[in-house]
Image (cartoon, rainbow over all chains, first blue to last red; front, side, top):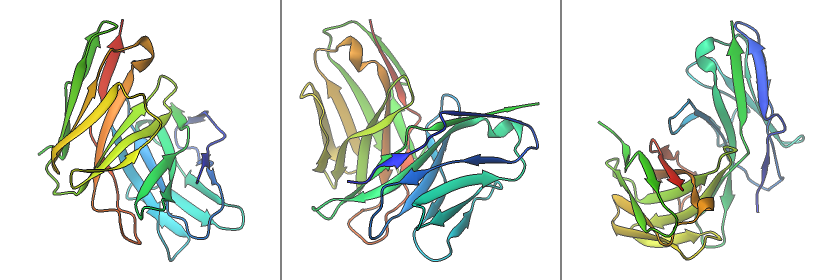
Amino acid sequence: AQSVTQLDSQVPVFEEAPVELRCNYSSSVSVYLFWYVQYPNQGLQLLLKYLSGSTLVESINGFEAEFNKSQTSFHLRKPSVHISDTAEYFCAVSDFMNTGFQKLVFGTGTRLLVSP
Amino acid sequence: DTAVSQTPKYLVTQMGNDKSIKCEQNLGHDTMYWYKQDSKKFLKIMFSYNNKELIINETVPNRFSPKSPDKAHLNLHINSLELGDSAVYFCASSQDVRTEAPYEQYFGPGTRLTVT
């Protein structure tokens, strides 16, 4: 079964500074990876995903993540954060089951705190 | 238009009571899910239905019983509520996941259950 590790439970950063949120997954032959964002008192929204192809994937609001197979990582980065980026960020991996179905396995989340 | 909706948004009840949470999606998706998010923000899948058929049943006490009257609805009934059931419960939906490419899961706003 797949597993996801987010080592940082909280990352404080100043506005306009760069940030990296780390995510590592257990190895597998094929893997699909996701970053979800949860703003306060809301549900989760997909930020970006890696299915295949280019190892660098981008979101519409300036975040990017790079799939690194050798390091089994999918770190999330943004070169300049805004106050509005304050949220909980979840890394997830798709886990294939022998029934043919898949499920998402989530990491424990990283709280990004952006201050002025 | 709300894609995935849940009712109620907040639920406060006493130990031993029975309660239900309802979920509806208007996205035409085939697969629906229930997740539990605890006080530390850890998100874990509980159940999943595909076209009214149960496909995922994680290690969940049998006090929890999902019901899917049609593919647009997935309700969660909880018997004999306990203090440890206090959490935020999220419903989600996606296209049929029995394919090579996993599909994005769309989450509802969550139901905050407090058991006193």
